[in-house]
Length: 259
Image (cartoon, rainbow, N blue to C red; front, side, top):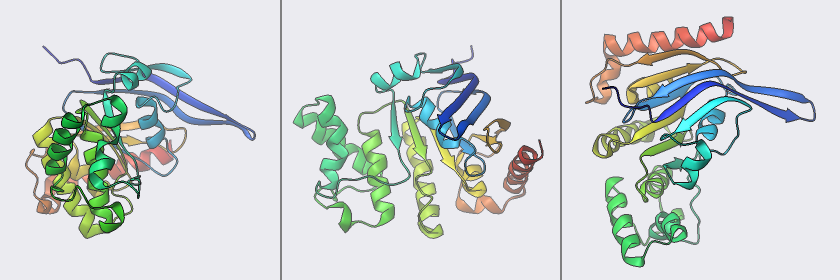
């Protein structure tokens, strides 16, 4: 029996009303995300990748079509805390230690001090930041701050992790390392991950499914199911299989411009 998709979008549209006229951000987007998948959204700037992620998170409201998250409406899923969200910037409060930053959603949700401490310790170990609980954000590198942001999103153990280009501002060496760490984290937690990126190699390296989007209004031009194995050393990027998938992504991006 096929498992029910964790995220289902059907003919999703979103139009923003502005003083200069309507802006058509998304058009006729249909997508099923299976449980445990790692799905990357890739496309040109302004194509609606982040907008689609924000719709899933109930931070934007579609103007047409249907969207369900864990069998609920997006707003119900938000209230049920069905997902964690990692933004482009780490967004850590400078006056709070790393431990207290990670604990913030747990405080808001009313977890006991003991539960907070146990969860913070567990997720900091997951992202390889054990021992940094008492440090402040300014004492950590950019990559470590992003790992703390991921830990915060994992703290309440939601089934879905939404990530909006979290490594885009980092240099290539740090980005490669965090890509490896994110794959290990995904393998250990078995969460469903939706990941926005502008990088073709990053999308191909990380994903079980790559969603290629067109320029605005954002439409899906291709959904690529990756044949790559779950175990992926960085040098897999030099293999013919990897290069072939990257070529298909480029072709999908090119097709979006030509339509």
